[in-house]
Image (cartoon, rainbow, N blue to C red; front, side, top):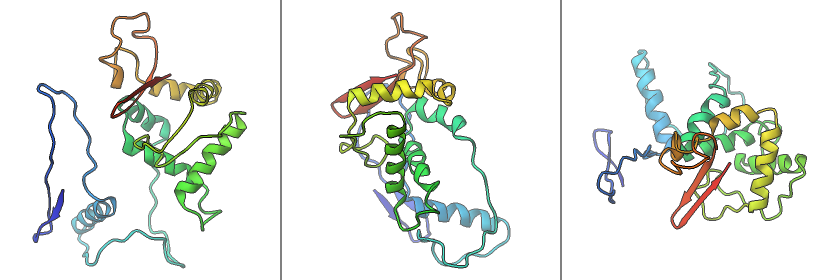
Length: 210
């Protein structure tokens, strides 16, 4: 529960419990993304001697807006390692939406998530994989609405292993019994230290693929 205080700070109340001796360190996204962006920008702007008033809003840039600065992010091949090793759902959603952002300039009237879904389906078609029954909701896996069949997943992995980004993809997957979300699983097996598997976990659901 987030509550804004009069001094401008935000107080968070966390409810729930962890098992005794739990070693999981969850990276929680607690603050609304628009408010977080405003606070970060305001802090930097004030630190540079500027002044700030008003409130940030999330909407399309007005006609005639001029770019003052541009920053290139790190290549996704680098970010993918942390994303997949630790199963970072927030970054996964960002990656999914990036697929739509790349084509939003050509189709400004459509939502980024809709364009991202179209991009995924086009990739499936290029690989001769049926997308029938495929359901994409938020793109991060933290959804009970999303659907993919075991056959589609297997065909996807085969196509990825043959693609030009196969090395980056394989490098990003947790190594069984060694690191990431697989460091404490299947520790005594011929697969230990060799197989690269991605976990998928929701309440009452556990999946592995790789």
